[in-house]
Image 1 (cartoon, rainbow, N blue to C red):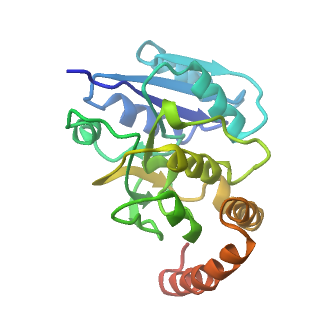
Image 2 (tube, helix red, strand yellow; image 1 turned 60 degrees about the vertical axis):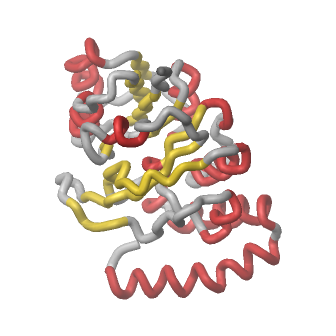
Amino acid sequence: MHHPTVSIITVVYNGVDTLEYTIKAVLALTYPHTEFIIIDGGSSDGTINIIKKYEKKISRWTSGPDAGLYDAMNKGMELATGDYFWFINSGDAPASSDILEKVFSGDVFADIYYGETVIIDAAGKEIGPRRLSPPKKLKWKDFRMGMLVSHQSFIASRRITKKYNLQYKFSADYDWCLHALKKAKKVRNTHLILSLFRDGGLTKQNIIPGLKERFQIMTKNYGLISTILAHFIIAPKFFWYLINNKRY
């Protein structure tokens, strides 16, 4: 029986306070068919020392200047040799050590596996579920209502992926996942929590430019009128959640 290899790619820049948490969680995975790749953006804060501490257990790693988060993720894919890509960036983690056994428990493999995400704080303590929940059956048209699946809970076959579009500085992951969904023939809902996502990532730190980029991507894929109409639903839900949960 063929067991697919999962390339777990971690991107980091000056992540001395977050990277070791992620490395330990990835190395604790019990699924044997993985490779672990770390792409560092030329850190100057001790991050490299953390990588070197574990480098015998890391498949490949590089350090050097890049053109931002998504350029680094492209470098990770170029180094990867696995059947699937799974991006678990610095500060994030797989939901459990046996999660990949659960994902790849069958003998017919999907193009995309997706699931739920739990938000954690800087100390790794659970905050709660992500604001947006994935639908039971995910299709590319569902992303008209936003990025319903966190990138960290989206495992995609290399056959249906492309490089991240560096035109987008904050929402290239939305464009990348949408492209993969369009190409996918089989998309499987794992009905599992796949990842722990550290609150306060790049998109949240740049919420307004990120939303502008996402609107552009939506318009490109769904048309302007459809995108505007979708925002009559998206915007009230966003503000209702913000008011009731004091987070987004």
